[in-house]
Image 1: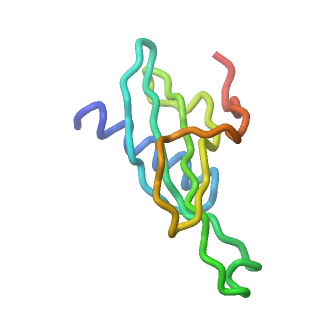
Image 2: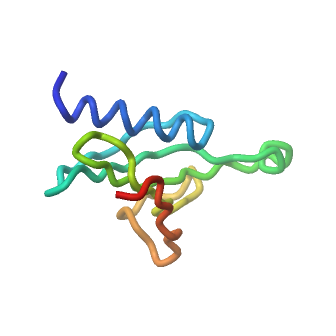
Length: 102
């Protein structure tokens, strides 16, 4: 299996277990010491469903080691489903969450 396919699966499994919901990997970029990946998922809660409001699409960024372990992640941006997607990243980016110490 190609290394990018393995990274894709590692990111998808990590976010599905961490966030407790599915989504899709939308990009993977090789770095000097690992990979950077972006994962997109729909975030909605009971209030939004009860009031008929649409869910929010959130994009998360993850940094992976060469061994394909997620070492840090953060939510890059969020938008309503009907909004036109813009570039990844925004002024209201969440802080990085460190998963493991190097």
